[in-house]
Image (cartoon, rainbow, N blue to C red; front, top):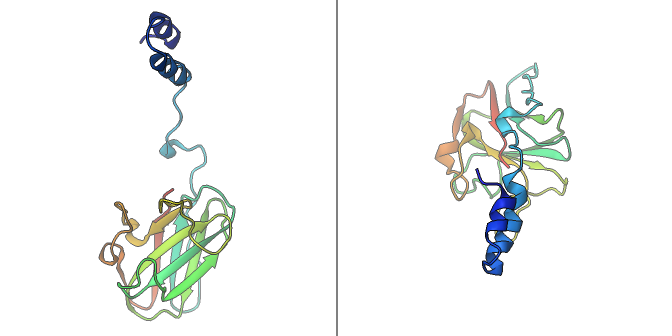
Length: 173
């Protein structure tokens, strides 16, 4: 591999734009590789289900990048409202060791989809930049993957029998 300093010395008589590129990329060429998220030194702790009397839908939210703020878990029954409209239920909870546990009680049997987000600044809504790109972590039931937009209701939907259900949702940033 050619070192950046050697490369830049070879192009002394090349236009200024090439020199600028050499200067911009020379620190990158000698940089050490960084660990990928899967090689994180602090593994995510998955919260254990809470023993409750009676039926409950428990949603463990994992992969949060910090304990700042809180997590909002939104439960939807209506495909027309999912994922940005009025939720059937919303639970906001604190974060501990980069994970959270949302507990929904009194939920009747039915077909649902869940949307979660990490409200890092505790302002009560999901922050996006001027282009609509998420600025906070988010996730969907079934860990349905977004492709240019949120997954549809069918991809995130699950059946709840009205008794007990525990699911884990991985947050994306």
